[in-house]
Image 1 (tube, rainbow, N blue to C red):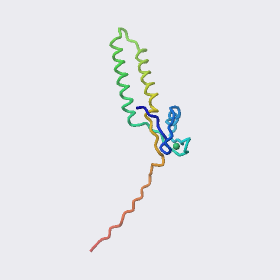
Image 2: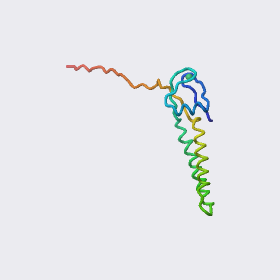
Image 3: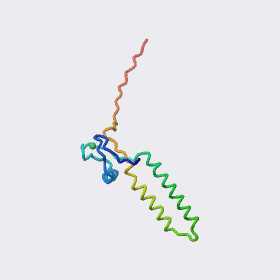
Image 4: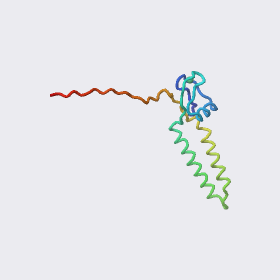
Length: 117
Ligand SMILES: [Zn+2]
């Protein structure tokens, strides 16, 4: 199912247009709760992009075998349609993550060993 991303802090559902804007920016601030979040493409998008690409190549090969004379325009048209489809569905494969989650400093205090004997 296609799902638009939500704010990781308050759960506000982002609209298609807002999601695209959020992808462009790296650091976003929620318009609802004013907290920071980061937009990232969902790992599933890789599969979502590969399948149309395979279909695109397959259609191009099919067109080539049907052609009596080589024509580049139908191939470009098919490729462009698929690129457009992938581009349009990207916001549905986007996930927002909290930027506060990134913790760089981890202080682990190690106990000194006492030598015995
Ligand atoms: Zn929010």
